[in-house]
Length: 342
Ligand code: SF4
Image (cartoon, rainbow, N blue to C red; front, side, top):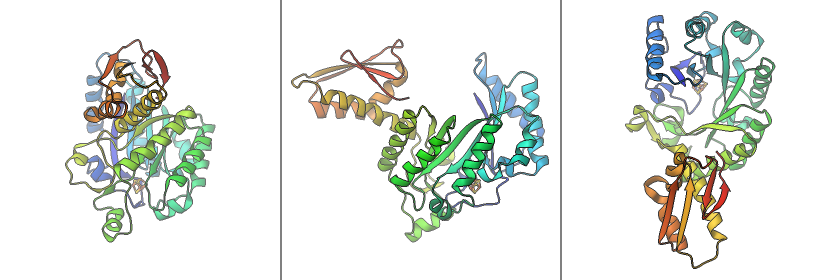
């Protein structure tokens, strides 16, 4: 369980071409009073009830280690009180790679920070320059090495569809990220947010975003690549929010409130299609057993996957059996157990 604090642009003197964090999060202010802080943590803890999963307080939405030292320690002091009381297990935050150095990490020494996420975005210096990130791929590599020395859990965030990027460069980024052995990865498709520099480029015809279909297809390939390396992808696509849903925030690009679901649906469809392709012809029914958590992935949005299976193989019946005893990383098709990466 994550108790999130979104502090847009906090500690960040840059303006990446795609960035408009106030629009994405809907949060206008990037300061929080001790009272607001405690109120929000207690509200989340009350919601948790009797659940006993790991609980972390998280600071997202900017460049945590780019803040002044007294701002960093203020937030960590407040959050640490909940860890000392036993209500929260540890802390996490996201930050830019070029703010991770021995001096900034020394500030964290006495605090229960367990997880640090780095906004890598790309490992291609040309893409990073065009995107006006203000750091290089080497900065990300050095940052990960420093975090590993101090034994932090490490998450790396990457983007697809950035200016100057393409599928080959995205794969090269994924390979370089995998070589750093992060604990987890997030993959975000680039969308054109209003009031960002990318919005201006889009209107001038200087930038064309990926379509939703090609973005899902590319992120699926990257997901499968990371799954093959046993690196967990914990998020694909921007977190859905009221701001993103109302259509006043996004100008263009592959935003979908259930982007990750679209990726998983394609993966399940691919697996079933590939299995049925090798089946003898003349059979007009199929039974597919899987864990209840995966049935919506198999069906796809509006049952699209089932419709496609019926059309492709002239099936009269696709029987879906939801079985909690079925492993979440398998699908059983007419008795044959097929692995599905998770
Ligand atoms: S580093 Fe992060 S907060 Fe700063 S401009 Fe770029 S995306 Fe926005």
